Length: 389
Image (cartoon, rainbow, N blue to C red; front, side):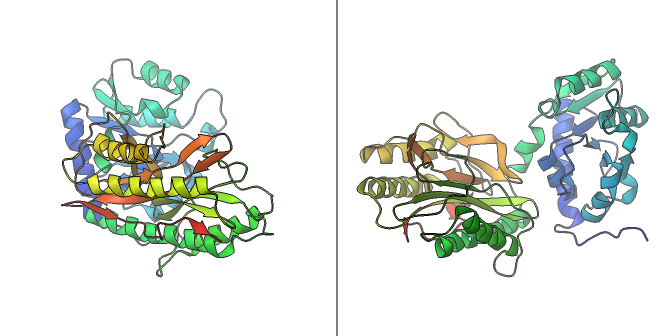
């Protein structure tokens, strides 16, 4: 029995709208075909979320065809049939002989398809940042008469402005992220292993919130004393004790879309230093959110935060956040000084205010927000407090 197509998160019209925007950009770049290797971009254009991108795969968008063609490992093709809006005839599984082969791989199948499509010798867009040097040379050597255009972030900039349907999914993801924070507040106690806390948090993120399940687990960071000056450490086998500080970062995931949140926890009475930086950062966060509106620049948001915490005697060296959407971070705009990207309705950002001041001391708080028509919608809603447990 062949695999059946699963429930579709978005209607076909939504994917065709996204593809139309991509094809408009292709026309501007004067390319006839676009080879999309980035997994997040493939999710955006098809609905595919299975984790098969550790081997070569690509979505080929052609100006001449309504639907793109997805080429991937044969054993993953049924997942593409099940998850995507694509006609099964647009899904090509390449043979296992191209896996673990030092001479040929899945990109050879993609290049063969470009020849069959008639794109060879014309303009072809390739996401060069997704390719190894060896794979990039393969495209050049096997398409010698083709004008190859680097389109590394072309799709990412298009998907930066979400549709209302996407925003609804990100609201669901935000509710899941909130539930993860509240679960952490419930189970962080002296004598409990960090690993056991995160097992409970992960279970909550999978169960979801409001009747909407989490469909994946994004990266989770549990930076506890004496490691609060770090930003991307996992949990350990250590037992939580009185006086511990925990900097937590989690994300809720729905159908590939992520909403992220960071909160700081203190087991017992927090130090005066921790209270002071919490007050400063909350004031800075509110100032930054108050700056969000269509027409403002990313730099405006960041500088509102920087100026505010400086009044409290603190500084933050790193950026204040970044565009967020599919698979967490989007490689486009940053909330940092000098980024003049204009904010537009339905852009979404992770206002990430982690501040790692010394090797053994830092603090985190963050929100995922949407640029609304006249201001800002904060998607994550867990209490904006220093959690004293």
